[in-house]
Length: 73
Image (tube, rainbow, N blue to C red; front, top):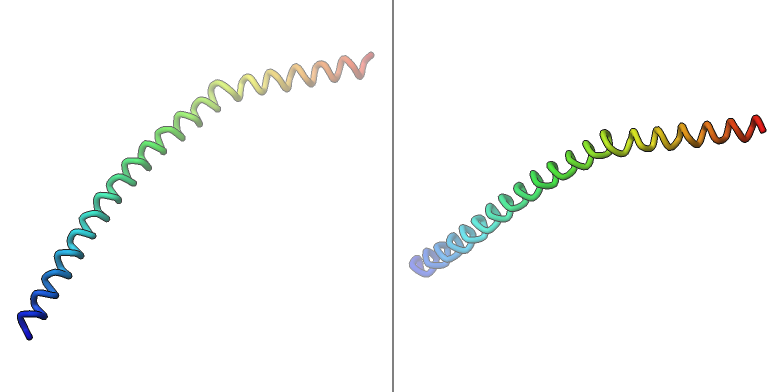
């Protein structure tokens, strides 16, 4: 009876160990993906700040000047 219990507990331990190893691997993959995602977001933010914001500012300035000219006319 004790041998059966021990065998069952040993099987359960082995299964749990395998599952925990799989979970640890999955967490490692998620961490790698998150760091890649953070880098991508940083690149996008940099591009927005340095390339797109000046262009939109110029665009809105041109729109404002056009509206002022129409008001004068």
